[in-house]
Image (tube, rainbow, N blue to C red; front, top):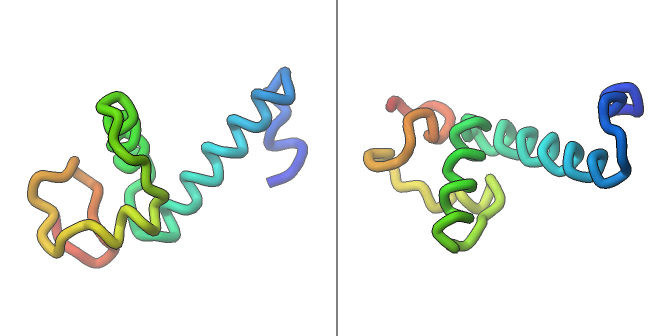
Length: 80
């Protein structure tokens, strides 16, 4: 990611937030978690006051069966 990718940001804080989200999305992809489902699950966890895990920590806590987890939030190579 370079300067041109953050061209729409109008403040330094906006750049920091954008970098945070790009980093989380990239980490989720590398961990084998569907990025949108991961962010949705983490937003709900934050609202409930639960611990917010990074994608590689979160995927290690997923059970082999993904029953009960939001659709799309599965380890790579597993069926839903």
